[in-house]
Length: 231
Image (cartoon, rainbow, N blue to C red):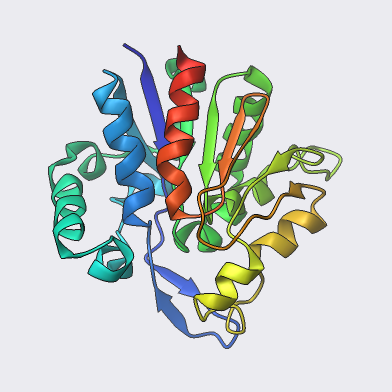
């Protein structure tokens, strides 16, 4: 079957407006739900991070209360432990898009720290969008779209319809007033059309080959849409 590229944050801290470091990384469900769906469909997964660092899971995303109980939290933690791809990432700057049938970006606050300003990721996203290959981005990972700028300074995703973690969700999560910037605002400023749904409810938008999800609950339905595109 096909190879799917997971582009993941290498950050384990998110710098807040007052300069303090908020522990973070990738959000467990947003990596695990698509990982399980793609593997079940027979696809191979390769993880890429800036510098090839092993990605850090946000400890908060392993809590029982955000996973529907302790049993599922333990199951998700077990998947992360057994997913050997996560322990052996390739360097993002060495990725050749031609090797992959699809690209997927899981979220967590980590991408707000590194992928939002990562030129290698920005170039990869631009090429993936233009290639027509299925491209999935969920929750806070659309922060990476901010680095996808063209030579004239415009954003490659300007005019595209996307779902992304909303101001309302960041507020309810208790971090909106501490953040340097909010994802919904920055995407809108870049010309990206953010379509907002109810906080925490699954919300996936398909715009051509681009498939985006608003929050952790959107990761499984997003994976299903990507699989449809892979046929």
